[in-house]
Image 1 (cartoon, helix red, strand yellow):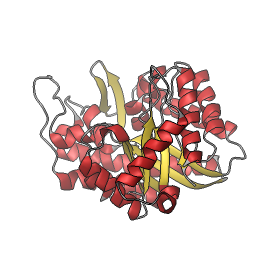
Image 2 (tube, one colour; image 1 turned 45 degrees about the vertical axis):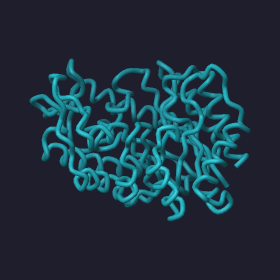
Image 3 (cartoon, rainbow, N blue to C red; image 1 turned 180 degrees about the horizontal axis):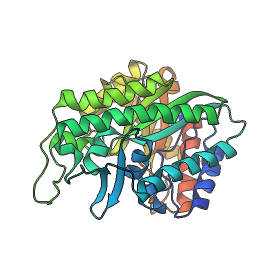
Length: 329
């Protein structure tokens, strides 16, 4: 049976909005709910801050230029960790008695390397040793994060760990700006890009979960991602090129999951009907020569990206629409 899920982020600016997001996700996505993120509450709740809250063994602080690795955790890093624990308390409370599949998300090693600075400035991406250390600390932290979730929601028999890599395309293309903004960091060699992802993917698998990689950025190197041992690929269908479509088709045929972003992630002028979105997915399968009955259980319907930029009304409608399309398929 085809499932539906969210990418991760939801609209809101208060802790109460996070609790409401948990209720919404559990109600509208009963087959594959996820741990919601509400980045509108501030940098401690946004993607990089939450990723650093999961990282094990490294300290960080918030500087005027953004997050920076430090010798000891600053108040904002402690706030990020506290907020993550608070959010998981909420999920644990509201998901009591839940059984089935659940998903959590974390910023990937390359997205963190492209957004976090070294202790003396400039991005972690600029230093081979620093980016290796950050990726390994993330891998260790992800394992602990999943173990914590498993204790909190014991009825879950299938966990999915989604690695968010919106910056991966820019990293491999050498498009990440330097601190001055006038230059670009050198592109990362593909073997190294793959290796760092493999560490995190392996840590998720070692924790007894399925590893998916998500990106809604154009030109993400999906063939590289597919070779890292992942169990699923998640992307905005609108930004996939011909070669990417082949990669997704090969992934489905190989038994991997394909999460297709086909529902608008921000309020559209006119909301699409479930019939229209369903037909679009069916046409995509037909174009790739895939049998819907053969791959249906490995398809997942999602919004095109996170819903943090949507109104609360559209976020709720988008999740309902994704769930309806999944049932149609």
